[in-house]
Each structure stands twice: as structure tokens, then as C-alpha cells.
Image 1 (spheres, rainbow, N blue to C red):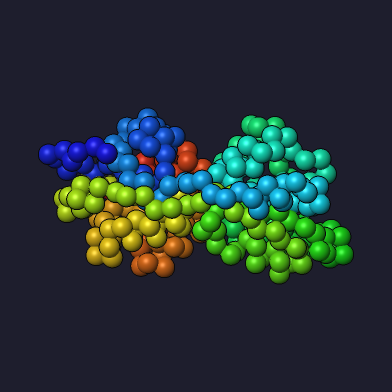
Image 2: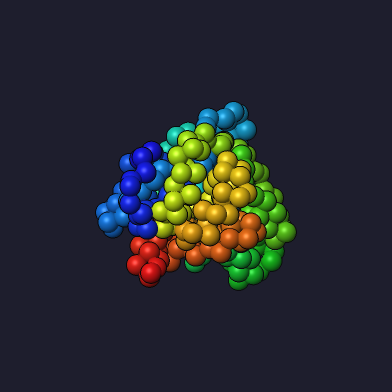
Length: 263
């Protein structure tokens, strides 16, 4: 984590994503001429994958596999490098879909908006177009984070699908240098804070405390990769700008444009 400079730096951007100081979002922001602070609010940890292994052992019993993140893709493809024949694939967000395609997996359904509610709506439209009987009781495998929200599983079950949700990776809090974080907040030297998941919002708020979290986002723009993440910010009373596309590149460009518009 970089030490605070002696001058205000309104073009400084906080990255809360667990990627390290030279991760893909940080690189994108630096290439756009922005300064970056790495405040990883959450990290990805190993977990017991027995349930995932059991589900993949009978993968051909599923009609669909739903991927909501690249972390889920990594966990599954480490065990199942090739796409299972006859099983359709859905992805939340273009970045997740791109990761699958780069590994040779076809992607049959990607909603226009990169969020869970949009995925459920896309399934609803697809089922309606095919006729209700065609997809009644379809089995869906959903490899998810330990902190996955219920939107996808509950939404698909309401459509009549039989969802098997298994933990593919664990999302955990990460210890931050809170003294340094609070020094930056007190100086009002941060221009924007980027969030790529609801858990990053909740964990940064927990780590900083309500007062410092509110002060941070009173001075800096909050930029969310998608609507679900923006809703978590809004639930905490913070206005959020949603990235022009639900990708790290879209998040970086939106952040740059916001900072260019600031006085």
C-alpha cells in the first residue's frame, strides 16, 4: 500500500478488489493516468470442495451450469477443463463469459446487464419463449461464493428450476492498514473508490466503521461494477455510479470520466 503523498491527489482511486497492487483493475487505472491505492476488503480463500466435486461427478444430470463470477469459473474448470456435452452454460457479466470462452467453453446465456436479477429475467424470457413445459423442473448447478446472495437460486427456483447451489470458493475479510486508510480519508485526498462486489462494500464498511466509511464516500465517488453492488452501497446511504459495462475495463473508464468531471 502506497504511503500518502504531501499534496492532495484527487485522481487517486481506491481498489477494494482482491487482486494485489499490480492486479488487472489497478493496471487499467494506472494506464489511464490515475494513482491507485490497494485496499482489498475481501480475499478468496480455499474451502471444502466435496460438494462441488460430488456435483461435478454427475454433471450430465444438469441442464445448466450458472457462473456468477470468474472465481467460480476457476474453481470448476480446475476440476472440469472441458465443457460437458449437452449441458448449457449461463454467465453473469461479460467478463465471466469471456473467461469461459477463452478456456474453450461455450456460453449460451449472458444477460445484457451483469447482475443476478438480470440473469433470472433472461432465464424467465427464455423459458417463456420455449413454453412452460419445456423447462419445467430443469436441473441447474450453481457453483457460488460462500457469501452468494439468494437472488439467483431463489429466482430460478421460482421459475420452476431445481437448483443445486454448492460452495466453490470462500470469500473472507482481509486485514487493512486502518491507520493509513484513515489518514487518507482525513485528508480528503481520494477521488474515487471502486467496488466489484457487495461483499467488498460490506467488508470495507465493517473494517473502517460507519463514520469513516461515510466520510470516505462523502468526499470520493463510489463506482460499482454492477447494479447489485450499487444497491449495497445505496442500502448504506451512499450514492453510487454504475460502470458503463460490467467489466474491469468499463469500471476503469467510468472512474476516469467521473474524475475528469470533478472540479
